[in-house]
Length: 385
Ligand SMILES: *Cc1c(COP(=O)(O)O)cnc(C)c1O
Image 1 (tube, rainbow, N blue to C red):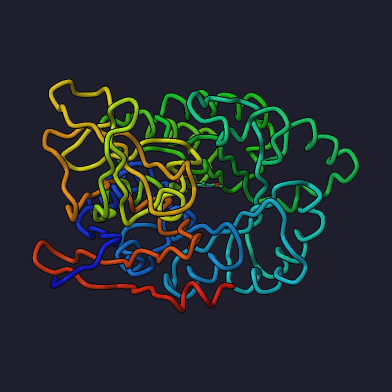
Image 2: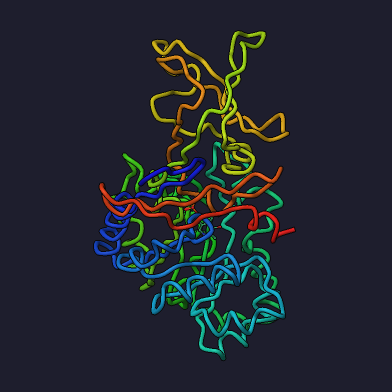
């Protein structure tokens, strides 16, 4: 572990495995199958471990499906995309075993071909039941949503072409984000009220992601009751496809302080780090949220920590600010700061704006062994442009 140069991601294998054990227990208790949503976490160094516990993975498009096909061999390979391309559908049919369509139009266009290739066919439904409070950007049930088929649109399509129904093996919904099982229960009630009449002819139902199952205090027994109720009432195989829950609290982003500026007009010092919100943790700006930081709290959370700093990146973007934090000691040039919960929606979203280097990726294999998994340099920046 000599000279690990910041910025770098450090993925903790033991923490991933702890999450996987929690998820596997839900599978054991209910007979459900759980898939990794690769868009959240695709660090395939961990796919062999994930394969030991989960049923497979789901993809948002061809490339993620290929990654599962190559790195999780023998596991289930599901795909959902709002719209498939003519020039990709053949390869998708070759490597996937489940395909979920977003609309009756897509089902009509590609369903027969996928069925003949031996895939199970699903339709994503929109139960028009918003349970989101915090983040409108993640509300797939908001008015005007392009994600999922509303009941009225499904019924219109079936009036025109009743044979569409016979193509379907399953229904899929994805409406949650970092939510607990009570919101799942509310959503399932809406799914059954609206789409219940179609469930008896299905083989499976996919509850999507957004289940914060591995978060402290998540109501796992309610989740299990929800799964078992649908399983028994309609004789369905239930799927869940969480992303966050697989890699929650399992990674860090290490950075170094490059400079501490004089106090601003409010008396707060800006600190320039060698990591950037815009490039290395874009969800901080997009979502937005303030990531947890070791030995510190976001401003306002602890009156005893008297040293206040605004942490920002070394890019040109005025808004490249990670957050304002309180510390119990004065910060120093060269000090290392460690952001937590950085395995999810981080490595999959990094970019090289301003020519920023991508953080290297290290894997903590055990308490005493850390290995370099990926090193990035100038060529990675240049090759994309
Ligand atoms: C984002 C997404 C997931 C995973 O969501 P998490 O919040 O990471 O659990 C699963 N399925 C679909 C269709 C998604 O869009």
